[in-house]
Amino acid sequence: MFGLTRRASLPYVHDLDAPLLALSPQDEWRLRDACEGTAIFGGTGSGKSSGSGRALAHAFLRAGFGGLVLCAKQHEERERWSAYARQTGRERSLIVFDASGERRFNFLEYEIARATAAGSLDIGNVVSLFMRIADAASTGTGRREEKEPFFRDATRGVLKNAILALWHGQGRLRLPEIVRMIDTGPRDLTELKDAGWRANSFHFQTLGRMLNEPLHPLPEEEGEEVAMYWQRMLTRYGAKTTGSIIATVTTMLEPFLTGKMRELFCTTTSIVPEITHEGAVLLVDLPVKQWHQTGIIAQHIVKYLWQRATESRRVIPTTRPVFLWVDECQFFASEYDNEFQSTARASRACTVYLTQNLAGMYHASPADNPEYATENLFGNFQTKIFHGNLEPKTNYWAAEMIGKGVQWRRNVGENESEGDSTGTSYGENVGANRGSGYGSARSTSRNRAANYSSTHGDNTWSSGSGWSHGSNEGTSDSENRSMGKSRGVSTGLNQSRTRSAGRSMGASEVVDYHLQPAAFTTLRNGGTENDCIVDGIVVKAKRWKHSKSVWLPCEFSQV
Image (cartoon, rainbow, N blue to C red; front, side, top):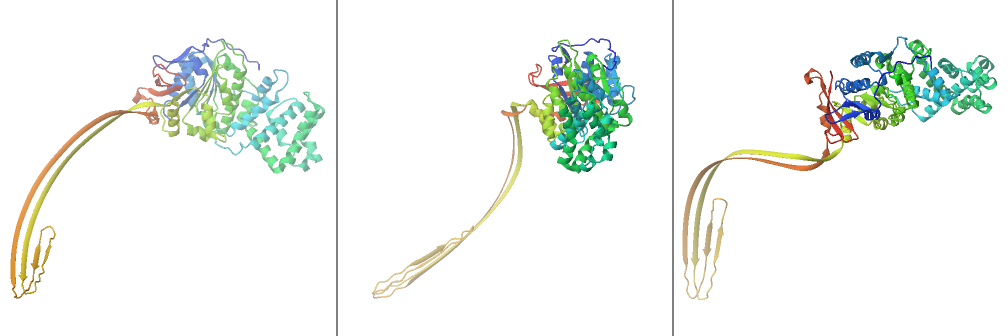
């Protein structure tokens, strides 16, 4: 296809149980693991690309795999992969698709050739390609305003009917003509009936040829359905909404109508995704930091068609594995990734996605529910590698993934006390008493007595008195008085000093994380201060021999 020559055969590893990387003295990462997908997380400067990323890339190249590499950063990814190819003896395998124009890929012509391989054009495949372009137009920006089902369905309808009209009316599909077909359509019902518009409209002329002189066979009812679509759209949605739908589609495709993108993607073809199946490593050097949204869309196109080509190839036990390498994957993730990854092992496809954290993925996702879409995507990657990170959501997510279990917590307590006390006491008491009495007697006997006493306060003070009276034939009187006083004073001084110390130890069972979220903030990030060693926690749904758990602490060399 497209006159491309077959490259010389390169030896490669194809046994699913073949080891690709030694993660510990007892644990190996095998081709089977690689085909189940790998996601690598780590903050900026954590060593994810130069640590575990480098180790995996070297393993793929040494094993003779072909692959597709996407680029987000200007120069960096290209220089890194050029070094990888040189270090593994794969310089001849590296093919760079960049803005020089040396290599070109007419993606629409390529898709038509694939879609007509069975004898007739599958319009659905072509429409799906353009819908991926529509999705890519909002990826990396976090825009979600055009993700409503209405606009998505309307966009699909416009593309489908424009492509059908062109294929049967003009006998070909070219991107500028798709835009022209949509852009010259009627804007209101009055224009649809205008004779001047009909005479000059490319849209109207194409519909006429499709109905009267189709260049590819088309059932009459289908042709009439396509012709009526535009009138129904105007009647149903009105001129304003119809204009918005058309503007959405034409704006999406406009970058490929002029300049460098038109040259690279809408002229001739000198490379196709299938070259990676023969061992080539195709690096798409249209970095996001240079080409911005246009670069994102262009790389999405290549990625989607590579995924489709890889899924459709015939796989036998000796089929060459291929890899998809996407650093800064927040710019390039798509809804189709879930579908592709679910069958990647059967296609012998090893996907590696690298990103900083979950928060960045949420921000870049155009999905209505970015958290669900992101976690659903990474749920299809069975190997996850975590490097140093300060983002709490990612660290807690990793800790939850590793899980909880019964942990022993040691309790150690120490106490020490020292005290001084000084006391002074003083006391004084005063006492006094006084009494008196009086009595008499007469012929008639009478007597009376009374007494009184009281106490008070700290220094006890008391007094008392009493009297009596009586009479008979005679009278007698008596009186007595008494008084006493006492006083005493006492003082005292006491001092004391105390000191005590103690230590207690114990242990208790608790259910807690096997690996605390804070542990991910302390992992080494390489560089000379760490002897060029990067720490990583490898998590997989298997029991690693070295750690006897689903997580394995690893060291990755940067040299």
